Image 1 (tube, rainbow, N blue to C red):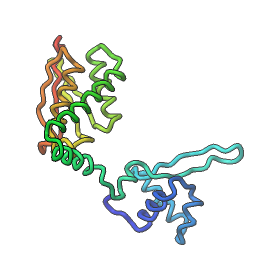
Image 2: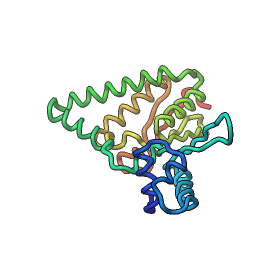
Image 3: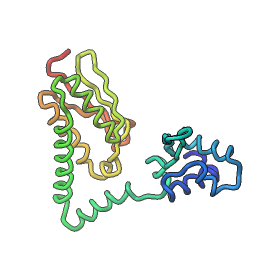
Length: 211
């Protein structure tokens, strides 16, 4: 959050402790006006830090509750980015690099099994689009462009496992292996990686039939 006012921080703290509250329950913690609190709360909702939910009643108008979004929870100190890397480093120290490779390969196999389970399309265009949709649901930021030659250029602007992949590039090679297994008749080429300092991970999936 670029600028966090004392009121906004207090709202985040209150919702972190209480999970879900109405505006009346929130106002118990403030001495300033409800209008001022609502303004700050509305900004947190607009910025994606707080989720607003409407609840129907048998009598009267629906009422609203507020709770932290995932983005809101991430404003608090956490170690989720460092702990997985540290655990892999500990495993490498205790049992060697081969153990780490085996573990990351196991993770890759689980990813492949999941994709096989949820991907239902056979048509290449639809299959690539479905793959992108599933990846986006899992935290990636994938865009696809079909070239004049009929190939598919995949651009991924966010890597949810970048902390691990920066230390263990096997994560990136496993991703290429995943694409190769999902599209066995296509050649898969990697052009850039976020973990190598590039702005985007870029891949090409060749269309074996051209256009």
